[in-house]
Structure formats: C-alpha cells, structure tokens
Amino acid sequence: MFLCIAKGFPQSAERKSLLTIARVKYQGGGDWYNDATAIPNLLQFIQRETTMQTAADEKKVEIMDQELFSFPILFMTGHGKISFSEEEAERLRTYLTKGGFLLADDDYGMDKFFRAAMKKVFPDKELVELPFNHAIYRCHFSFNNGLPKIHEHDGGPPQGFALFHEGRMVVFYSYNTNISDGWADPEVHKDPQPVRLRALKMGANIIVYVLSN
Image 1 (cartoon, rainbow, N blue to C red):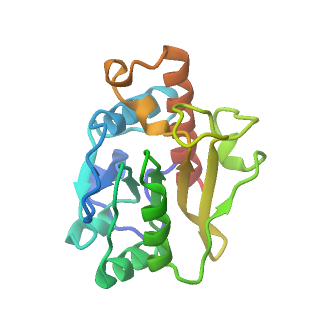
Image 2: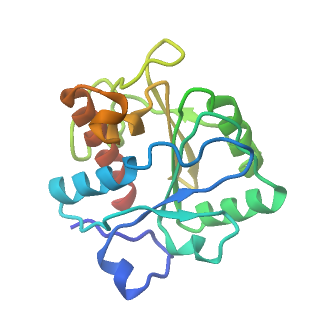
Image 3: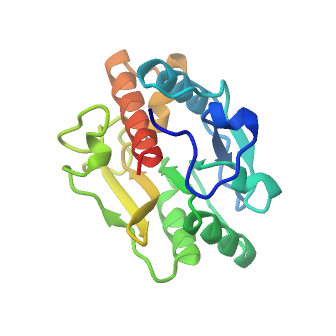
C-alpha cells in the first residue's frame, strides 16, 4: 500500500489516513483557482482506482501559510502570471528539499511565468524532459508515449518536465497538454469520456509515483 505522506512531513491523525492535495494560491494575477472541480475529481478517481484513501476536496494554501508543511503534494495551474517574492521562493525551496512535491499543469499562458518562478526557487537547477520509459508513465497505468494530449495550446506534442533534488523528483510540470482540464467536471470543457479517463489515469500515475518514491 502506498503511504499518503511524504518523507519528513508531520501529519495530523486525520491526514495520516487521507491523501490531501493542496492548491497553491499564488500572487501575480494568474487564475490559480482555475477548474475548481479538477482536484476533487482526481482524488475521487485515485480512491476508486488505487489502494489510497483520499480526502473529498482539495485544500488551498499560500506559500507563507504555517500549514504549508502539512501537505505532501502541492498543485499549481492557471493561465497567467505567477510571482514569488524572495521569501516565498526560499520557503518553497525549503518545502521541496525537505520532502514536499509540486505538481504544476500548464494552462495556456502560464509557461514562461512558471519557468521563471522555478528559476527563482532553484537558480542552479533546470527542468529536464522525462523520457517515455520513466516510471511516472508506467507505475500504475501504462502510457507508452508519455503524457496524453488533452487540450491543444501551443501546438506540438505534450511534454513532461521535472526538477530533481538529490535524485528525488520534487517538481513535475506537464506542458502543452493541460491534463487538469481533463479532471474537471465533464460539462466544463466537454471533453469526451476517453479523453477525461486518460487525463485522470495520468494524474493518478503522478500521485502514485510521488508517494512511492
């Protein structure tokens, strides 16, 4: 059974049994709240398709909130600008290097701002594209061609990027696919069910990989 806790993170009695994903409320003007049903639907899918027990809803957290370190997994998405202060960048770096994980899903217009924000968090690290044979694409469901394509944004294939710290993946960034749109309620983006299912399966893979490595 996969543990719903990241190494080094204290958890309350409630959170020991329920996986919770916290959505980052960031500054800069980007719509951090985009697709409000995405994470609850992903959590429900994970509970149904894996051995993990999940919370019913996401949490929302700012980087400087005291409870940041209570959450093993953070989620970011949006269409616009992301801005971290020096203090926020330092705190997010501490969170990630002490056992936390950030899942970021590019929505149209987010890419350049997210990359700049990560450079502020880790000036000495680069996002690297993961090969199709990486474990994140096969740890629960099989994706032989890497990330599934959910929505067209900038043209070209979807790409999965990661940042590593001391050999551990601390950030996964899905680009040019927008998998979290596929997690939202079906009437939001009107994606066909097979497309939504691929998105949910890939989301589950990411969470399973994170909590087992």
